[in-house]
Structures are given as structure tokens and as C-alpha cells.
Length: 328
Image 1 (tube, helix red, strand yellow):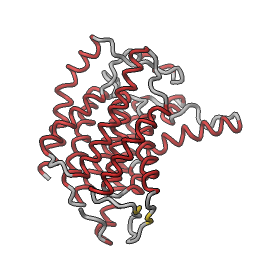
Image 2 (cartoon, helix red, strand yellow):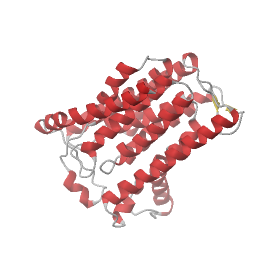
Image 3 (spheres, one colour):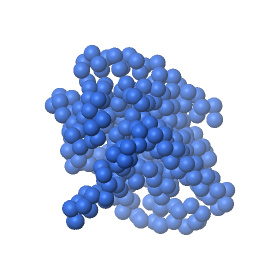
Image 4 (cartoon, one colour):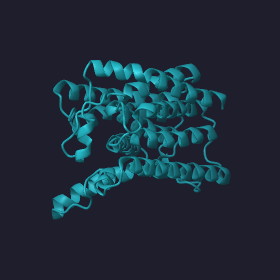
């Protein structure tokens, strides 16, 4: 428990202390956000805000992980997914900066780069990390064993959540705050399972995200960019794989699922019937155009994320007590 708390605290402190130096460095080099055209007009004022702050999150998580973790295979799998996806996001952000546009790598290219990363991580998890191909449902002793299809399932889960968090990262502090509470829930789940190293890594990412909020909360002085959002989304799904709670992730991460579904629904509705279900997607932009203030949307989404995380952790805890879910 002490290692978990210490990892959280160190992650927060590093983010808060290093943040101003990184922001200054990014400003001097003109590394700022390029705002997409298909966003509310109010976002134009954010043009040029320093971006690629995901580097700060990953650095603030990496150091306490090195200090406090014993580097078990499950934690290394999540580490690989998080930092590998962060590297893909970094390449995407770099291309945006060099070309001075809001689009970097194409969606297909991102998926193509994530595919070998996910397959390798899942292979290691299955063969060396104690993970199996059975999907566990809370309160049920038996699960659905999907065999080799688990590789496809895991890719959809990890790539899906990685990009869902990326879609959520559209308002100041929205992604960092919501991922932070979801990661905190996974720190608790890992602790219940007796997998302290996984709990330490989740705590590192929680602390780094919370510390990042010091500068990313409204009005943001820095954005995380794809470097941060792709990394955090993959890390969250990686925690679900490592703790064998893939189904439960749908509840804990329901806010991210909702953000992604809003985009899918909007696209299909417009292509089939030439009608839009929402004023704008992802759905947080819909509420902006409904004249909700940015702060109101962010805080309410944080509350929703916290309730979902609490519900997911409680459900796992009750299942753990009732039927003895895996405990390491």
C-alpha cells in the first residue's frame, strides 16, 4: 500500500514541478495546438496553446514506476502498451507540428502501428503474464473462452479505448480527469488481486494525470495531444487485459464508450438518412452548442466518470468477496 500511495504522490509532484519548464520550452519552439475546423467557434481562442503535454504525463509516470515497481510481467505488458501507444501519438503530434495542420497520421496508419504492438503485448500476457483467453463476467464463476479470437478482441478493445480517449480529449482537463479516476479504480482492482506492481503502475498514471491537471484544467496552459490520449487509453485497456476485467471495463470506461459511440451514430445517421442526431460530435461538443459552459461540461463529465469508476470497483469487490475472483 505504501508503494502505491508513494507512486501516486511522486507522479503528481513531478507533473507539477516539471510542468512550467515544459510549457516554457514548448512556447519558445512554437509547438502549439492547431485547432480543427469542425469544432465550436469558441475553440479558436485555444489556437497555439502548447501541446504534446503527454510527454509530461508519461515522464511523470515512468520515474515512479522505475522507483517503486518490481517489474512483473503484467505491469510490463501495460507499460509496453502505454508507452508504445504514446510513441505513436508522439509521431502523430510531430507530423501535425511540422505540417502546421490539425491532422497527422491517418486513422489507418495509427491502427497499423498499434496492431503489432497489441499482438506482442497480448502474446506476452497470455504466455508469461498469467492471463487467459476467458472473458470473465462479474458474479459468474464461469466465463466465455474465446481462444485465439482473444487476440482480435484485445486489439479491438485496446485500439478502441485508445482512440476513444483521444476523442474525449476535446475540452480542457476532460481526458486527464476522467482517465485519472478510471485508473484509480484499476489501482484498487489490482490491489485486491494482490498484483501490487499493476497497482503501482495504475497509481503512477493516476498521479501523473492529476498533476497534469494543474496546468491542463480550464483555461488550459498545455494540452496532452495524441501523445497523452493514445497512451492513456491504451494503458486503461491494458489494465483491463492484465486484470482480466475486460467486460468490466465497459462499465468503468462507459464515458469513453459513449464519446466514441456518439461519433459512430452521427456518421451512420448522416450517411444513411442525411440527418444528424447530435449538434456536433464527440458528444461533449453537442453540449457546448447547447450553451453549456466548458467548465460545467468538464465537471459533470468528471462526476459521471467518478460514479462509473466507483460502480465498477464496487462490482468487482462484491464479486471478489462473493465467488472469489482471481487474486493474483
